[in-house]
Length: 81
Image (tube, rainbow, N blue to C red; front, side, top):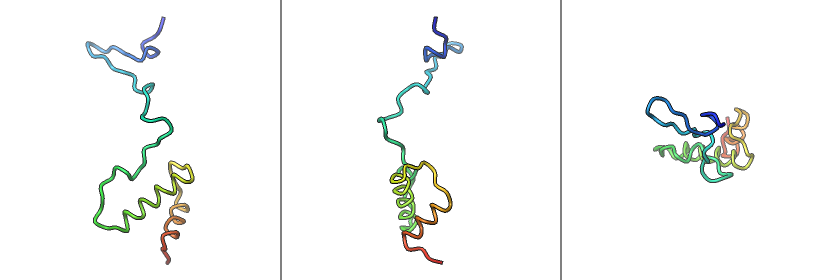
């Protein structure tokens, strides 16, 4: 006999809730990009940095980057102190 959690449905009162943890999360192997949905700013240098960070994360298969990696991305864009 399946429990409520194993069936993917739970009943609380008269409302049915679907267990979305078991539902497919979009196309397989595709991750949601951090900056793709953010609004465009009026400063093109910020957009350039955001795209460069996103590209770095794609190339290196990283979801999060460290400050050192962020600094490396900034250096690759021509930043100098």
